[in-house]
Length: 87
Ligand SMILES: [Zn+2]
Image (tube, rainbow, N blue to C red; front, top):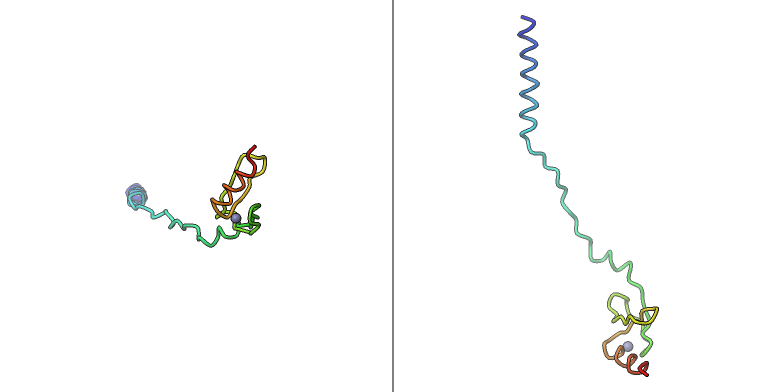
């Protein structure tokens, strides 16, 4: 009788393990996309060397080439700066 009881418990445990294993756990947490406003924190103002206005760095037109990048408000200013610094 005792053996039968142990057997029953054993089967019960196995049954629970199997049924538990078949259950698919929903793990994936909903991925939150970064709020667009969060990026604004990193926005710093840079000065346009041509017309001397301040523009957000992310919106500025960047000219690499010299050791420090130069930022412009528009393509026009970048061209003017490039022309002025040519030869
Ligand atoms: Zn400008």
